[in-house]
Length: 354
Image 1 (cartoon, rainbow, N blue to C red):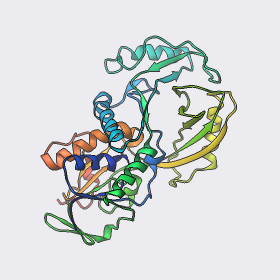
Image 2 (image 1 turned 135 degrees about the vertical axis):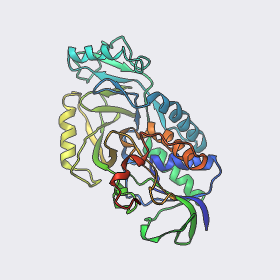
Image 3 (image 1 turned 90 degrees about the horizontal axis):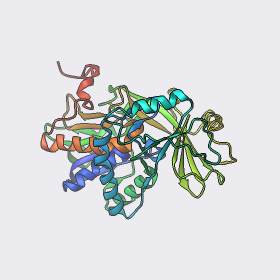
Image 4 (image 1 turned 60 degrees about the horizontal axis):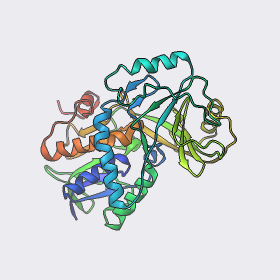
């Protein structure tokens, strides 16, 4: 069997790159073993503003200009609805918090997203003593629905194998690669945290941050916006809300924990005061990079091996843009954005030729 590309991993990164291949009529085969679940359990929120510091997300406008049409195209292609538009309401904790909001309005990259008029309404069940700030241009991609539907689509076309990819089976030739009975020109690794086991790219400084989320049912809350406070409360419909998220840098498992649940419940006490029941708890390992820039590019010694990883907490925004940049780099000799190019870490790779 001969294909142009093998893709290892079908989370947000792999999916975005596969779409580039399909559009360019390239042949490919995906390997997915469900070992990494960060995309499946992600909140999926796209928000151009870092609300903790009232600063713009890196290249937010450019990313959204690519991402939103990308997801609309997939909705039409798979006949699904995955893009839920809503306003994000930042709950202020102090007058100083409010003042920082007004200060941020002077930043050119934020002015189109931050509403200068505060929301002074009260919302049943929401604890907020100092009003709200509205963030525009926000929403959520239902990542679980997206990825499950996309995997089913690839399966129906015989373009995905649900099995573990075996690095030891890679045979590198001068221009091609043999993997078992497959010949390909390139392998693109989109493995998330799984890259730590990849002998070709495990030198890259990928950090693992476990995140846990709760799904709660709160009939008396009745909000149709994303509430951002010490955690986020995201409406899902039918009185269900996703609540999160934790950051745990020591637990490397994808299993929901008692500690994670207790942390979220404790924080939620400061955000809402209506009864609720917990209906689900999920966890996943976020692949994050120091500096919050993805890991994209070709191996310094083997240009047939490629990585697309480290999308972090804003994967739904970043994924389509970096996947397009990578595809154009591989197929059209377009330069990779220096901020995402793995060449910045060549000094960490002991196998680099001198």
